[in-house]
Image 1 (cartoon, rainbow, N blue to C red):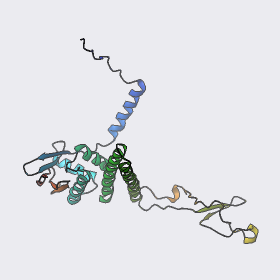
Image 2 (tube, rainbow, N blue to C red):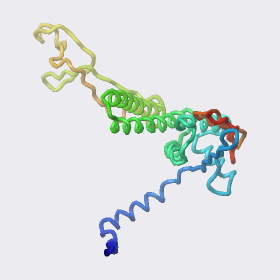
Image 3 (cartoon, rainbow, N blue to C red):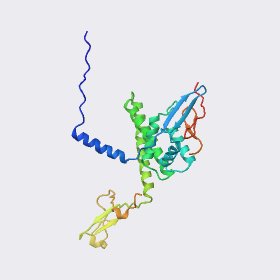
Length: 265
């Protein structure tokens, strides 16, 4: 029996349009600062697990400052505590953390370049909420029963709403008290004069009520953007514990070592 000969036809190169887009993408990628990354290792020992978080290169002090900058802080306590909380939020049922998931969350935080610890905390929550929402969306698609479909779908929807609320909170924090004006009704009378405000009066003849505006025919609220003139401007250390499903992990940068955790069973 003759074996099938694999297709050895060479893959065509990119078209002129694709090649042009590749060049533009390369340029934009070089202009973006490279997101901080870590090497995450977890090894099983006789009494549990050993965890270490290390730099992906030999400059351990430089790695420490990259992490400071990524989290908008100069505090060892905050940095290590927030990494601990982030690891706990991303760990699976067995307490393990996928290195790719951790670096993905770090990219979200570093990509927004937080100016303060509050911003870094919001960004950590954003990354964790997104990861959990996407997980539940996937579980919804794979659901084999209506009950699971509803449960996972509802949870995914709530998480997505939370995600949007977190983005809005971060945006308000960065704007720093921008003024927002909401107008309930707009009345325009003969001659082009407009009365703007939350005004509600009895209906009747204009001449009989001294030119006061009538109640708006359309009872729906009207929101008016008053333009930019009224809007504000958008405006290492000791140890870190990474909490997992099986116990507490302890890490000390630039090579953070864990406390040994007892394995289940």
